[in-house]
Image 1 (cartoon, one colour):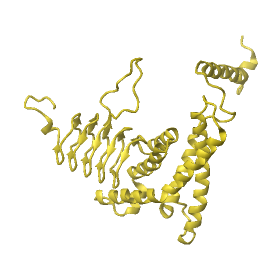
Image 2: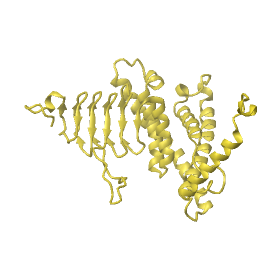
Image 3: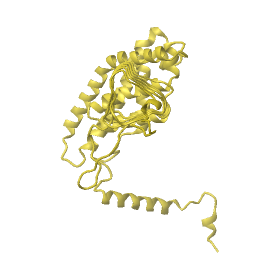
Image 4: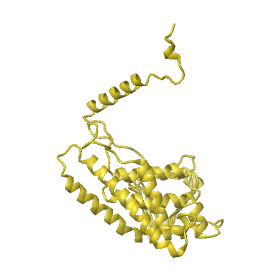
Amino acid sequence: MNNPSQLRPGHWQLQSVVGQLREARDEWRQHNGRSCGHMGGRELPSREAMATLLEQLCGALFPMRLGPVDLREETEDFYVGHTLDAALNALLAQIRLELRYVARKADCDLQEIEDSAQRLTQAFAAALPNLRRLLDTDVLAAYHGDPAARSVDEVLLCYPGVLAVIYHRLAHHLYRAGLPLLARIGAEIAHSATGIDIHPGAQIGKSFFIDHGTGVVIGETAIIGERVRIYQQVTLGAKRFPADESGQLQKGHPRHPIVEDDVVIYAGATILGRITIGKGSTIGGNVWLTRSVAPGSNLTQANLLHDDGAQK
């Protein structure tokens, strides 16, 4: 018969479970050459902290639309300054963590890390006015590109594609600044909220519009020009993943499409590999494309088929 104490409600034998979890962590750390944290304390950036500061940045960029409900124009600058101060100090802390994480196996100079973190945060702050101007082109593209849109305020408040692009612009700056982990966290927060998966490394020109958006995937090395519009379920992906001599996937190689200016890509299109979609082209729905197309092309499933029915 079992010991009555083992059957008592709320008695989970936590001491044993906690001890076994500690053993599992220690085994993993020993196997992977990891300590219990660089310089003590938290080792990795926080997704929760990034979510909060990104939301604050959205409010600071568009205070009267994405800021607090009771904000008035006469206090707009005060709110922006106060919010930016909180967001940038939080970002500074997260940048420190990423820089320390990267330097964990080296004899890092803490002062050098601090100087770099301060410099990167200042550069991010200085970039925000131009990011706002760039985002204005995206918001206008969404308004002009959707006949159902009644105002720019509606697309900013309601359209998941616009939210995804705001987060991407912020994450892309972090990526280019040499902070890929923070950038990826920001991108995945947007992915979770919108169903739109844009790698922070993707280069995207102004006036970009994702209509509807659910299921869109844009890879790390994709390059997208200006005034491009894409619809739901579009993939700009890699065709193959070459491996090195040890069988590990090679990283950093250009492997995603180049989409030139004024291209429209309709729902469900899959475009793979380092190919170029020429300026002014239209790619029809559900097209599977693995070759470059000339400027001004108009591709549909029908005109991609040979006489024998095999896709080009």
